Length: 136
View 1 (cartoon, rainbow, N blue to C red):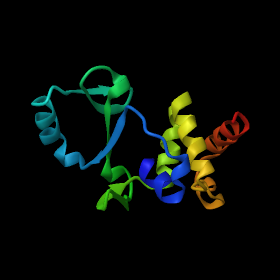
View 2: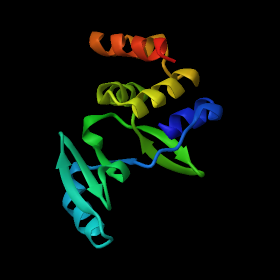
View 3: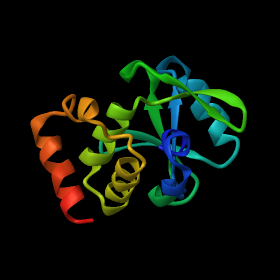
View 4: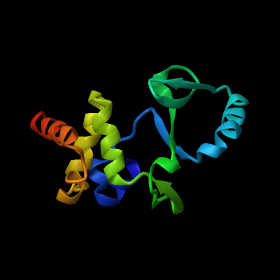
C-alpha cells in the first residue's frame, strides 16, 4: 500500500507494524529455511501464510506473486514488484479490520480508488467500500 499511496499523494501514507511480502510460491521452502535462521516461525493461519517473530500483530504476511499480475513500483530508487491497486483493495476490504479500513481511506484520499477500480470489485466489496466511506 505504501508504494501506491506515496506515488499518488504522500500526505496520505501510513506505516504499519506488519509487512506484506510478495514472493514466488516455488521459493516458499527456501524462504522458510532462511527465515528460521533469523528467529521467524512459518505459520499458515486463517488461509494466510506468514512468518512470525513474536505475535501475528508483527507478522510478515506472504502474498504469492502467482495470485496477481504484479506492477512495478519504486522504493528508495529500487524497482520492486507491488500488488495491483484493485487486488490490494480487495485484500483490505475483505480483511474487515479497522486498520485495513484506515488504509482504504488513505488509498481513497490519495485518489487511488477510481471508478475503474471500483467496478472491478465484487458487489459485496463495493458495499463495504461505501461503508468505509460513510464512516470516515
